[in-house]
Length: 81
Image (cartoon, rainbow, N blue to C red; front, side):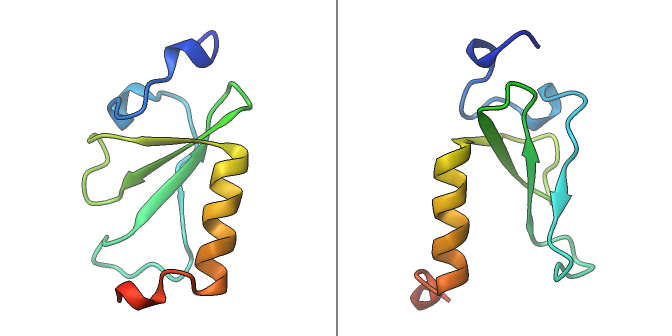
């Protein structure tokens, strides 16, 4: 992968070869969680559904991912549960 032009939101996670997918240590054994990976362009972070590891990946800029994670930690989306 040469650069960010090769990364497209919604591309299959399987196309993101060589990235290190990680999920929360709080994840359950059922595989019902999301996984994140830093992309080699240094600009983007990918997110995928762990139940569908070859399915689509949502791509975020690092600053967008940081804002999402901060909001999750602050409980901004707790009303959805």
